[in-house]
Image 1 (cartoon, rainbow, N blue to C red):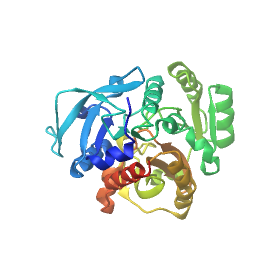
Image 2: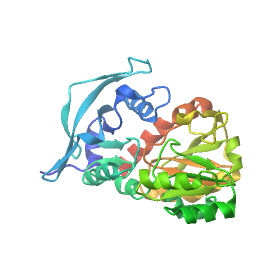
Image 3: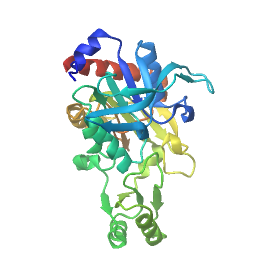
Image 4: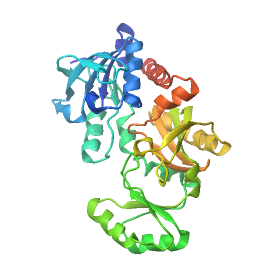
Amino acid sequence: MTIAPLALRAQRMTLKIAFQMDPLAGINIAGDSSFALMLSAQAHGFRSFQYTADALNYADGRVWAKAHPVEMVQRIKGDHFRLGDPVRLDLGTDVDVVLMRQDPPFDLGYITATHLLERVQPYTLVVNDPVSVRNAPEKVFVLDYARFMPPTLITRSFEEVNAFREQHGEIVIKPLHGNAGSAVIHIGADGKNLAALSELFGQVWREPFMAQAFLREVSGGDKRIVLVDGVVAGAINRIPGKGEIRSNLAAGGHAEATVLSPGEQAICDALGPELKARGLVFVGIDVIGGKWLTEINVTSPTGVVVMDEFNGTDTPGMIWDAVEARLAAR
């Protein structure tokens, strides 16, 4: 079968977008970034389809999914979407763009999805680029920018993490591929419970865990900065709840309006060109204390809804502009 180049198909029709994401019925429409993108796609006149990662199939060089046409989305809780009957959607011929937006865990299932979507890349634009997503786990990709990181250790060894604590005092330990602030634990300078927690992490996860020097500046917020095709779209400051060190909105933090510090702008200037080169169109980075880079989230960044409310911006519109520019350049 001969498949028309993507840019030519995009010129002939309204864009068709496949959203690979968690089920629409269970999302929080007040803050979900994927839902905001779907609303924006509807406003642009694009045609959207939704499917989950476990619906992907491959045979004879083709990748397809059992997907539902999205007939309507709206910000009315309990009546926020309407789907059509499922269709067999060939991701190489039936759509112009696939948005890979399902939440972690970043496990073998997630990695397999990137391998399958890699097969449609010659014909369909996948955002974010699946090869780059696979090669950039959020807490591991940061190692490429170690000059901006707080003191960090990756290990499975209690002896190593205990020596790290003796060197740095208070520390934080967290799973290497966790998300939304899950299992992020503060260890005091006395090391109480560190041995038990190290043992527990080793039993629950096969991967090493991460330890970092505790940053007292986190009480003043953990800044989420969103970059669209390497350019800063905006930021919010996420403040931890009382008695918490985790500032993730999903973990009880609240958001405040903010602007970038010179140190944060320097981090964005360093990351931006590489993100664009890797096809990482929609990225959220986390910075503490105006200078400490802790995560580069390329899987399913959040925060754009409240950020746009504070700033009067339209980040989903910026993302679609970047997508259309990439389509035109293919």
